[in-house]
Image (spheres, rainbow, N blue to C red):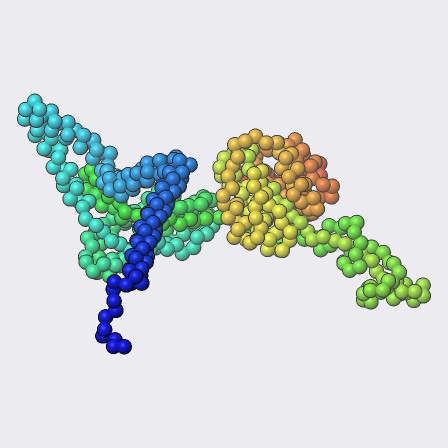
Length: 469
């Protein structure tokens, strides 16, 4: 058959085929419309569900979202205040505010009531404010280094430091004034005109007349006018702490003799190896052959070994009375702190066990520097305590102590000292160092307590030599 011959279109089969195709197309269009409606319905349902979830979240956390907006607004306003408004207002000094207030009042009254004299006064007050503003305008870029030679000195030793001011920019910086805070005082020095990448160095010395923790810094650059109407300062270097340790004296061998106890404090515990001989006993397997007592072994015919009493290292307690009522003056209390620190330092040098404390603090003994730092921050207490509590603390902190040194003031009575000594364990060497300003060294006794009067720190070795006799 020729392929180009057309098929008949009016036959029954052809008509049925056309009807089937037409019905199939209708079904396809209906399915497509149904699918589109279903997708649209699902989309609308999903949006509603997400809206419900968001509404639910808002309903469960209304306070968080409501509070977040005011908080962020306050933070933004606070940031604007600190960055923009406060630096401008802070530039004007109290005198400048007074002049500005009078000038504004004169301007207001003079313009309203047309009083020429008030306008002239207002103009005369406004001109200095404008000139003062010209002095503080401009931006200064410094690189400032604050360097202390040491952060710990002894009373009477000058602490040396330096401040280096550098110009890190490529432009010239005009002269300015630098202020350095040292404790409650303020040191000032002038910085000359600095060219690009030029620096200027100033050395300073901190007087250390008293035991304290001094705050050195911060370093600020200051620009102000001759009338001090406006003052602009910028902080460049942070502050640093300087510890001024109490003055101490080194105790010689004779003065610290009370600390030396070669056999320590004996105990009831027995040991197979020590220096305090106790008795002889029969040899048991595991005993060291070096401790065999051969004379007794030869006489008895069986091995006999030495038995020792277990001993402990010397333990020194330094108890400092820091009640303000017990001292006549601040100098007297400083003498007591120096005496306690000197005894503690000598004990640490001799590698003896040490427990230094006061009514409200226990000084650390990790290192010498840490211990002196604790003595530096020690202050007088205004509370009222009984001195026997100091002895009780010594007994509680070191029940096995071999010596207790109590450092007290001139207002301490003999009854109080005796009450404190009665709290100590039996067999403890108890010494009270009574600090009296400018007094002569003398020794007395209250029961089993040795009392030494100390008037000057340099006399401490002599006072302790009297105890050692």
